[in-house]
Image (cartoon, rainbow, N blue to C red; front, side, top):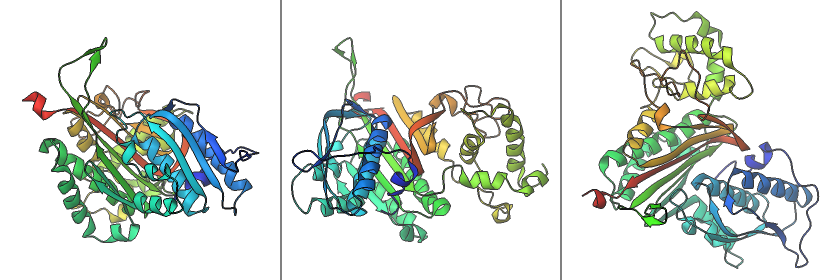
Length: 397
């Protein structure tokens, strides 16, 4: 996969002096029981310091986690990308000591390519790179799609078929699977259309879990569908919209044109800019704007009356699955901010505008406080973490 090295290039700060242990191994010892963005930030500081001090030296780097739990799937996927950069771009040998405690939000870490790095052997690095790019086994689907393949107009149709084949072995109703497959395919297409980059897709269906209340097991079993889709690029989620909204043509729009939704978007911007501050910025508004139905960051010249911009409605697809879930954890990370797809804030008004707030009002209210959050790291590109927890169909019957 291209451009994973951007993780090191864009994140500031590094450890000044890094020394090897007496056995010659450069070790990062993790003291966090729960691995989250805060841990990843510390790892990036360590890795940047290492690469700065020993850029052309083939060394052995060991990450010692011990017994840990990952906050979500995206967290360990980003750590995989760091390992990928160390092996591919710096030719380091990497070893990972990891005894993961699975949870429904980050199941199947054992089937991650990281398992290869827990073993000893000269070929582990190359085997890891191969597994990073493609892996298909039982309940785990993983694929890196190059920008060249995404540019082929026939490929997304092929991807639809691959995903359909993968999901048919699980006890998941079609009402959930169909929007998930469309969602993944659309996001893969966006990686090419908006960022011209490779796209990583990683999906797993967890084992069955059950709920406990006061140490008493509750009736029913549950499983999670965990999805990560990401690309590395200088283009962020908000980038195209920032460019579009800065053009003078926006101010010349009239409500009678076929671009009426963009005229309305300008009205929303005029309201929201009164509330911009360090927590809610113009860039944040652009991220919310690009997620609106029938809105795109493409230039107005490419928008025709018969082909108004916008995809099939990513947020509509997410909401349709959320409505059938017991719980979910869905967000998109881009740059230094995350946008959370909170179910209660994904209700449309009568004109199909999302408010990203409990009022369902994009024109007279700003997003709720829990929608846009600061991140511990800067992500150069766009990464989606989509987790859906469903009750087993057998239990319902």
